[in-house]
Image 1: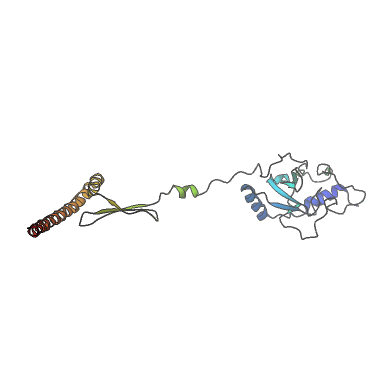
Image 2: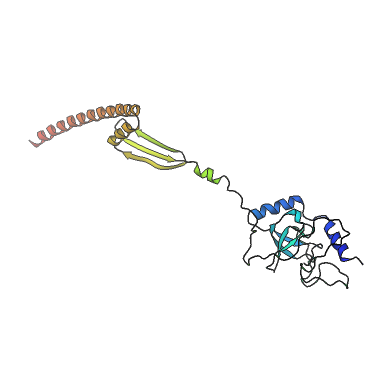
Length: 251
C-alpha cells in the first residue's frame, strides 16, 4: 500500500491538464469579468471527479495551487493546481455523484471531509522544494462573481473615434433673378435642403466670411438687381398700356 506522502508526491509530479494557451485564455476571460467554468479531474483532492465550478481568480504560479475555484453549490473558494481542473466538460455518465469519492481509495484511508484536512506533511527525505500552498478555503463574499485580483482592461479606441467630428457642407445657391437657397449636409445626412434665404442675409453673411466672397456675391446681387429693374420697367410699360386700353373701353 502506498503511503500518503507517496500519493502526494505522485499527484504533484503529474503533468498539468491546463496548457499555457488555456491559462492565457482564462486570464483574458477573467480580465473581461467572465469567470470560466471548469470541471475537476481525477487528480482533484477533496472534490468529486467531474464536478463543475467557476474559476474566479489566478494566483502566483510559483505557489503550485494558484487556481482559485468555487465549486458549484458552494460559497467557498478553494485552491487547485492546473492538473486538478480542465476546461473540457466530461462526457455524460462520467460525472461522479457528489457523495462519492473522486478516486478509489484504500479502505484504511478515509475520504477527507474538506481540502484543509487533506494536506499532507512532506517527509524530511524529500527534496526541499517549495511546499504546496495550504488548501484552506479563501473567504469570499456571497455575491462575488468576478475575480477581485483581475485588473480591468484599459479603454480601447472608441473614445478616439467618437472625438472625430463629422464633416459639414453648406451650399449656397443663387439664381439670376436674385433668389437664394441654402443646403446643409452633416456627414452623410442632408439636414437642410433648399431653404430660401433673402438677398440681404446673403450679402451680410458674405461680408462676414471674407472680402473676396463679399465681392463675388455683390456682383451677383448687382446683376440680379439690374434684371429685376428691367422686369419692373417692362411691367410698368405693360401696365400703362393696359390702363390706356381700359380707359378707351370705358368711353
